[in-house]
Length: 369
Length: 184
Image (cartoon, rainbow over all chains, first blue to last red; front, side, top):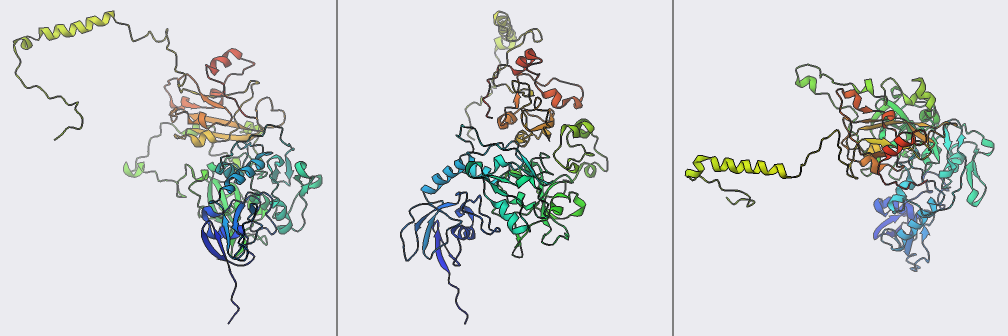
């Protein structure tokens, strides 16, 4: 008989679950799922060593373990605290946690510019969700914020250091996915900034995953920059036979009509990159930035969007356009159009493809047309 | 069957008496009502010469606002378009180039902005959604036209006159609207 695997009983918000030793509270809460799970801005289960930086996953430990049932004196970061047998954790049910977390949100927003109307991440931003969840969508901070110049990290990635919350996820991506890291956190304290010393370009094939990993709009896709808002594009699951070693080729296309505006990795319930066969589904830069035509992709179907997300607003639930019924009803007579909108409207012209422009559109692009 | 309200009036089926058969008293009564209106206050005005003031909450034609230096407020964030129940608003964003700072307030702006006035229901949700005080509904209505294509309003039709180059027109377009305090 094989040795019995020892499990630990942990109770989170009155739900008891058996987990393997070495599991953190956050991982145990994710196994339960739903509202019990604390939010996480810096912890990323697919990146080793991440977590412990943002403090949004604070929980109250009401009883340490069966052996020592004293409560922990302070709130603990659930992503870094391992479970003990008989531990009782309070997340939603705690009185202290929502207040502390709201405080953490305010701290994160201290230096955040709140330029959501401009930011390309708006609509799928974790900080935005977190702020609205805790009623802290504004800020009380009245002093000058730290400012940085926006920077190009390679030809495809734009860094807005002002929006960064220093979660370090992107540096872990560089460490663990690419062979040599050329960017990191420079300076200390208030001046700390992500940068590539001497603006060295990142030309690794997997550097684009930094964009997916970034919880805020600090790292954004330059090929999608200002092209469209996230909630006007339709997410579609697609795959292609990618030759790059390590690339899973399974992506989400953000489409508008038949145009592919943006390609991202597929995300799971926690906003992290989905795993396929136990391996995280990172995608290469060829898939992400250079394959922007719908013909190269095999479309699987619509991406499931949370009912509460703005991304699902005003969208049909099918991939196909609704059928024109006039012809069938009128015995083959075509409907007589009083006005074709494309003859008058200058927006969304059928022959003009914004997705073909490499970077963001400028006034020069519109003058040419 | 019991009536739902007591507003129903039973029709009288009694045969008319002599006075009623003559009809003259009823006609005279009606004429008196008409005559009495000559001495009452007129509810109508002579429209094009005289105009009634608009209510301060009137929701009319949209206007794209500029700041006091004449830069466009709109950043093409798309919140008006997503809030629009009639899906009348479309736009295309672009990045501001160096040297265009006097034209656009933020680094992103609406290169194209269109409102389909045939679809617009003047609900004012675009104004409510706007985080930049860039769009508001003015105290005028959309002028009538013979052709549908005239109702596709582009950015040139919607933009408020320049406050420095054309201050009088700007003030007129601004109306009596209370100024919102904008952040940033």
